[in-house]
Image (cartoon, rainbow over all chains, first blue to last red):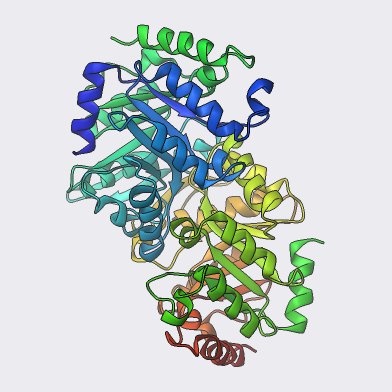
Length: 264
Length: 264
């Protein structure tokens, strides 16, 4: 099934909210740290507590690479009901033969539905992922961090058919990803702290948007909805560390309900 | 010891050539595929055959993620003599708390001397790596693939102290990375297929350059030397797949000697 169909199905049943799983051993409740594989236990309990409320989960690869590894990431992915969406937040980007290996790792081996990618190296770093027709690739466009001003917001000149156009780099990324979207399986990552950009992007393209940066990073879920097309708000730390005690899963569920209640 | 000191030491003893380890199960000799951990065996034999000729090894993370995983990558890293340089070709790039996890994974846990990073998200995606004073971070600048024209070569406008300057994005990356280099531990990745760019970059900055794309990708090692500062030419497929039969390690050594003989 195509990612977009799967999304619309689960949106109808649950909601459009996505939870980001960034399991940090220094923030996991002590009761869980005593377990054999604390990262796995922590993620499983969060999934058990929230899976009927959300469209899916975004797994941040860095947190698995730094602690219990790829096997645990694969176990967490496996534990999540296949009816839900799973996104590898990997932000990979490399030349063709390397990109094919990353696609194999995340799509074939672990079975994620989607991945996040960096646009810097251009189309041939994206194409191997785009060739998986049922999988979705979200390309970094305008992110929620302070460093977004360093390159993403630089003004670039491009010769279009008619004229020399000047626009921020992130708009150029949005335009090109829209052009590359022949298989209807590319999307963009846009930080929730930049709601004006969502309007601008929707004037360029109607492709799916993954919107992290809600909660802890300062984005407000109410500002990122109503733009049409698929928009997936993603909340990580505000939910998964809502409590750092034994009641973390219950607290995560309560917080998830709060976010879902703000959705239309 | 700082990366640069370590590099100068091993350059004196061996050479400046770096071998890229991109172990692809579909290209590994059948005799090795019969081993328990073919990726590990393949990399070990290559290291045994070439370690007295090179400054170090660049491990392409994608190839490990797609097959035998991070544990094997760590075993290969461990197997390489600590006097040599080890680079994780990871091209990571994410916000601060995530970047810290990647730095932990590659620098603390696996013990690489250096990593490759993507500049797209700006300084706060680089800073957690730069805070490891003895470790080196090479930031993607101008790469050797066709997609480099999509964004890297776009002309960007920037207000400098004196004037509005217009330059390709990759030059803006070179300038900013040079400014960020407070700990003297940042470098750039520049593809060997763009030797003119090396000259241009050396007019901007004298920081270390990692130069992949030699051999299979079309770059000529003779064109990338003589620019001053640290320049590390990196050869992957032309060496590690010089033979796809039982004599692969011997063939890799012969090919390595050929490349080294072209160095000044």
